Image (spheres, rainbow, N blue to C red):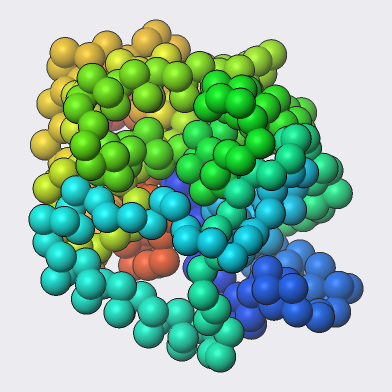
Length: 383
């Protein structure tokens, strides 16, 4: 994993805007509708090639496939693991959160807005949400789809010059959230089975020569969903899930792994986000070489000061979000540079890579990140 040796490197957290025709194809497949497999594969291959080149042309150093083969960051796993299915039943995890209870009108308005946006993207295809469950033994069966993803990214990188490339994969903890356990005798057994299965995907990505990014928003968001839990309850919950992800990462070099957690994409009042000070030590126990966190979100921008007291382990990298997904404004490059410099002065410039808070759909903000990294480089390397 490269460090910012002679300049501040830039990256992002994975998901990038998909072309509208690709969105339609991905939704058709997800909904079980008929589709032309050859045309589908060809369109994904072209989309990945296009998004990789766009990242490089924009100035991003550490790139990925934009998750363009996936309908979203987590649903892809249903076809890669045995034992998972959808049934007609209430969706367990979509209950109230601390914030939706505190601001019911704002969150109801957000639901209406998201439903309207979905109807525009996928007309006449909105169906009632179905519960996703684990109904049988878990094992990894997605080797073919994973091999396609790896090959598509390798091809896309052949004619561009990027510092490094990464691929994203969901964490065992988030699989546990989205797919309710109705088979294993305990949470621990279920987590272990998920970790064993995802180890196959994690190892294949690293063996292919890519950085592996584990996406685990649940580490940061569990507190908001678990409305009656205490801080200690949440820490115990996270500690068990850290053990699970480390089990999934066994035998994989730490310096090939990035770990990402965030507070999801809800653009609404948020006063109950779990503060980084309550779980930073647990996050740093994940066997990764780099950690991606939200740091531009107005609710969390002040948390850069935490790193005065929390020691980032030697040889590790921090990738703070320096542009946010939860505001409609595009930050000025000067502000982005200030954010980068704060972290660099605390941790050492070589151990900071500029990133985004979460998956991104705004190219203007990414360009602000690139320009902000350039300004920060000028300041940090002129001293």
